[in-house]
Amino acid sequence: MTLKERYEGVLNYFQSTQPEPTTELTYSSPFGLLVAVMLSAQCTDKRVNMVTPALLDAYPTAAAMAAATAHDILHYIKSVSYPNSKAQHLQQMAQMLTDEFNGEVPGTIEQLTQLPGVGRKTANVVLGMVFGKAAIPVDTHVFRVANRIGLANGKTPLEVEKQLIKHIPEQLRFKAHHWILLHGRYVCKAQRPDCLNCRLTNWCKHFSKK
Image (tube, rainbow, N blue to C red; front, side):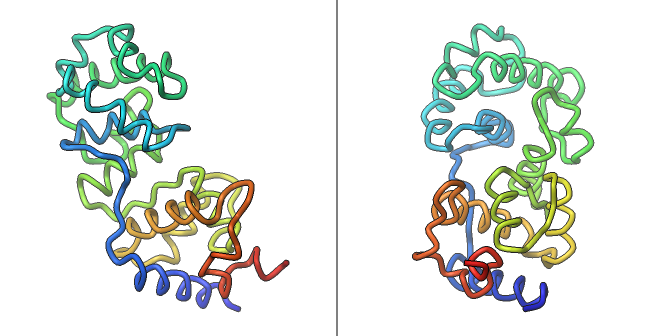
């Protein structure tokens, strides 16, 4: 099987079964999404969705969150992973948004990754969800699944991102991020991939080696 055939098979399957995938994070504003994605690092979306309503009710804007202390923010996010560092990053992020960007979430990866606690993956999620950019955020699920099934062969998230961008049509890139992420979350799991219930086995490099 050629790499082109593998991509075509995987993408055609997802297009036919999940034509409009989306994030499982709940949010109502660009700032709310940025906060949620920052909190979601090494934490489940379900847990983040339990935390963000009260947090964003207390601090609905960058200016409001910037006026809080990290200790104030920590009160709302104690149940997420790494709450102390995330509380500090949220306060610092909100401060920079207020000081440098008039409180608005910026629309380039260069600007977004200037914000404390915002890496390339988080920036790409915001670019895709808020600004409709053809971004491919590579989190742990996307990194694992893309390498496992043979869409990529990369040692770093950036290497995988570049390979996916090279082979996925622009109009499908952000959808593909959701497709691969959700597949990794529910089927192609890290420790026990559910190959018996996977519908990608015809194109999966890992399965063909079994």
